[in-house]
Length: 607
Image (cartoon, rainbow, N blue to C red):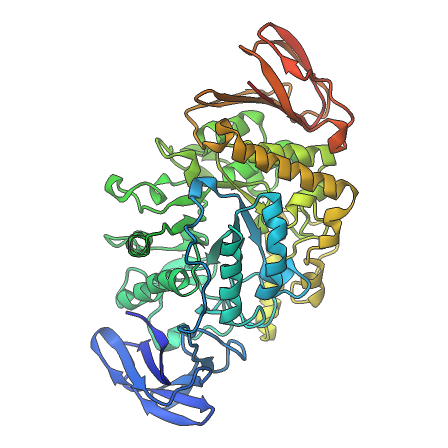
């Protein structure tokens, strides 16, 4: 059941609302002329109206019980913000130019996460378009937009969205997002959209006025959980499962990243995530192109991506934070918060080989056993990163990794990510070592809510670095400081780092041993005392051998034996990458050798 306003053409529009407990509902048109149109109640709590003389852009509310006007919970656009009228949108007149677009296979994705508001000075969908060519030149083939569902005010990370179907008005209009997606496809870039199905933001959230969208049965960090399995949950499930299809069908989005699914509670026989996966699979068959669902989860639970016939939900991929945490702590030696569970090269080696470090291991941070074994799930079902919006923005100062470690270690981290057998995700500006922070920012109108956000963020920062000056998330300063500075891309070490990322991505795309995301053809060793990791990957006749030195001293490798002839293809310590110069030979042949590798560096040999 499609919900919201569906413009049919010729000034005819259908309005569908789910509100099972109301006795009277009407469409209250407020512009271009005011009019009240009574809706008819149908089965399972849906209200329906087919109306004529409705122009695109018409503003309306739903009037409940003759007493209160509220925006459409499935509004397609909120031109005046979260508290004002919804707009009828004509989705029929889009001149799409991507009919030949077949998508990017999941296992080939190089994902680039960006925040629309801070990616460009303008902070709009349209302003992203001229930057797509930069990403293509870098080697990126997929962009992931942080949430764009309408949130209060004009600046927000997006996780306070309250209209799941409406694009954020400060970013542009619906047609602007369509233009961005269309242009991306024409340049060979897939688009993933970050969506939030575990909660609604607090301001402008009128969902409970309409129906039992929430349940007291479960509690989330944001309050009562969304009602996916209790009485009247059928309408809630429909609202969200239709939202999945809405983004794929109406906006040609290639896939969705589902935020924090550990806060999606469903004890029913068919989990809502499974239902979503089934609908996407069916839609993919209809369209003849594969669409993807990628979950963010901190549970280390392989059931999320396991096929339905094997008892899983059947999602396509999931994030794995263990890789980030393992690499981050080896580089920075941090031990606050959840980092207390990490810090060894052995753990990083396990992340390469087994994906989850905690696969039913005891977690000191959680004070319980955590995770399960991934079994036969392939590496291309996991997305890993060395930076993302959470890992930067949930620090008080919003420091990027390049602010915390030296330039050699920054290159080392890049190599560790892009030589892994997983889908890599970059956070905007990472590729050239952006120096601006990425802070948490909001623009709420409710003073009590602003005070609660300030206090809540301070509580979160207790685990991650209290030193430095706290920047008020409600301030425009927090937002403006978070905008990235594109001019840095062409400056000194930033340009070198950008070229370094470009080279790594090119190797990943062109060398079969790196292109094939296969953990079976992978061998990794860790020397804890030397803080050294070696990585050997192969695919048929293609082989690479990498050495990663996380030590701040030179490390001597004795009695190294590599069978056959090997050619060095990348060395982060070379002067061309602003290193101090390499100690490693250009070629290695079959015999015992002693190698010396510079601090915080890595090398790649190809057979």
